[in-house]
Length: 299
Image (cartoon, rainbow, N blue to C red; front, side):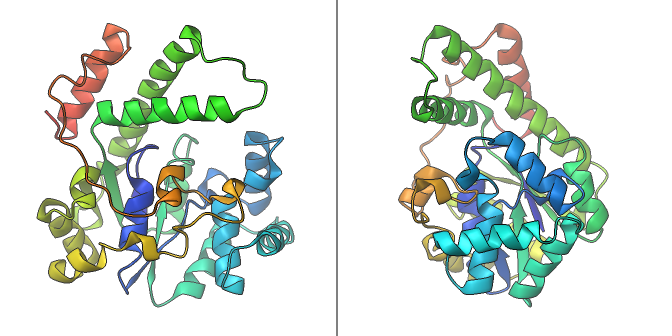
């Protein structure tokens, strides 16, 4: 099963929630579908963070360390990386098969934000797992964009040599975030359009975090689970083995840092009717995001 969403769309807490059901296992982001082989995945991760080896494939290494050794510590993460390097010629799907075998009979739930921008990533997963089900997790685009903007500013402040945050960086962050959100959802919508209804649901992250029947009912139908049992089980995302920091902040492992530092459900504030007017975007991108919001069921 694959949860499809752009970044900053409640994907971390949603997967951790789903993983508390006894029939499901929520993985951190594995980054396996950006390429066909393990070696190519390792190369792509190194290219994305060439000067930060400790932050390359953190989710995949944490999953391997947890399932191989029952813990996530620096030595285990290093051994997980060596395990991957020794299998560089493996198809990426063989690694996922290995993880699924380790958690069987539970069904694995993978999330997609980092791999979604790669051409062919979703299609690669669908090719390797033709019977998979998909959850299109959505969040109000304006709220997502504000979260992306805050995250980019935090990342900028933590990056050595990046210089002070200024108007140029700020404008770039708003526009880049809008583009990422818009094109990610367009890619997901195009992919999901031909799927049979029994294999695909769209769920609002705001409703899932609130454990609203509007989210639980379609999820229960997709997964073949009892809706009543899901409401109580999904209330404990902090019990996931991945809902914690590693030895340090470098070992987050495909998780939202805010959630990892305080892994609990939070109340989602109501949407401000004027929220789009305050976005620092050119008019064209304002229009695109408003239309996307309507398409996703937001007013």
